[in-house]
Image 1 (tube, chains in turn red, blue):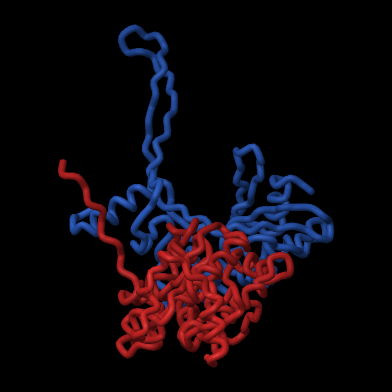
Image 2 (image 1 turned 30 degrees about the vertical axis):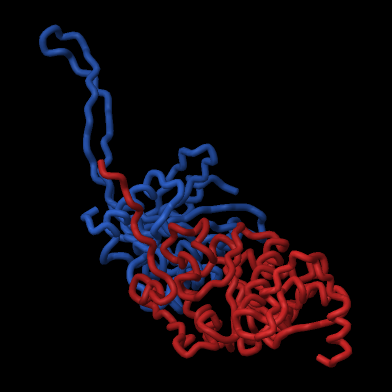
Length: 240
Length: 215
């Protein structure tokens, strides 16, 4: 920042008497940045942009989330509707549905995942480059939905993939998908680029590998990926 | 279109010794059907398609039915004289009977040319274990191809003369036939909000297994 803008920032900043000054202490450290969020927002209102690399990087990423052009069932119709003019997913920067997983950032699992289709979904996910995100859209992708008791339906894609956003509904309205996308943008904006909270592709301890299940004689082998999903413990019953 | 009883007479006149019976449907819809023996099934099907009065040129639906062996108790009323007084008295006689076990394939036939139908024909296998073959009607109606594959996949009926008999819905290498009534499905769901009846039983068995007890 040049001296002139620094001065301008100094003069236009309102100085309430009870403002805590701890956030803008003169000694910079990772824990306490130079200015607080409130001060930065006030500067923005006056037309002065102060930002960090992490923030502008995440801002750019969160407004260009390109989904994979991939639909499974009736939820896909709602996904298509969300991309059309009436709901217009382009307002959020996600209108570029990529026909190749190599160019996509977001996998919207829109519909029932049958056991015959599950290995292909995991393979598509593995072919997407990091950073990538997964939205489970609709009751089927979350838990199997109305087909939960079926022999042929996977009981939720979260048995094989790390799901970021769950959108309930059968099928969800396009507004619900847009809301889920906004939640995902919020999640992306909150990600740290360094430290222990960094996303998996920036960490050395996460191999980012998701094994593709095989077709067994009666079920998928393995029936779930224990690294991302464990069956819930049985409910605790009162002693009788 | 002629009634099924009359159609059966025509079939029997054309194919003497063929095994054709009319299976009445007691439901309000009243769609009776013809049960056709396996050995003449292909010839009778060709007759149904090529006969100018019938010209059933369109097979709209092929489906399978599983009939496991069941014990049926039939109640009949018998009037017999009472041994002491000699007056006639009505007794209820209960007989137990085992139904035969077989698989059934049902074809719904229509005529596009003459605008009538459906004529429903049924083919039955010998049993549910080793005699599960019926003749394929794909050479007569090409539309049967995928649906016979589906019946093969889900019920385990093998169709003799089918050009490409493979599984169509489940993957290759899958064992068992999921639509059979004695199919045991994998125990792979853990929670049910409003369990009742069969689902409740399954949920309890799953819970017992998860807690380490014998279901």
